[in-house]
Image (cartoon, rainbow, N blue to C red; front, side, top):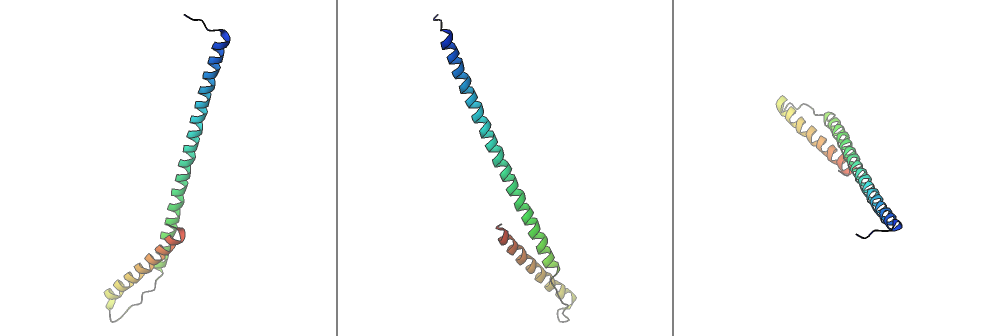
Length: 104
């Protein structure tokens, strides 16, 4: 069995400690980068959901505010159906315009 000198043994140990320290630091940085990417993705998803909810609320307001007069020729049911179609079309146009404005 060959006995190492004390200095050689300490140098080998120091090199191993440095290698392990570098590996730990590399893993820590990778974890931090991964956590930051996850946080950014979550924030983006939340911002898009908030924008979508705002667009839906705005579009509902447009649809509800659409005036649909009664037509004696169409009757109550016909007027209601025509009004619902007009209201729905206005709501959908407002929603799509809002989505485009937010880039959704």
